[in-house]
Image (cartoon, rainbow, N blue to C red; front, side, top):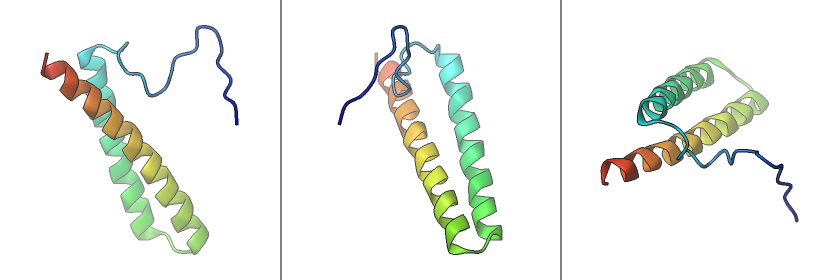
Length: 77
């Protein structure tokens, strides 16, 4: 497997370029997204819908975890 890297492209798991304020804003947005997805999951039925929603929740949670880790590492400095 190989990965393509475009010149000037930003690594989506590298949040070091964000200000602390922007990082906190994005963390709040992700938490809201996860809350909405959980509500959708509770109201939907069907294995395919549940699987798709679970994947989206997991992706959002992974991104949230990475952002919180970045924020916490900055606060320790």
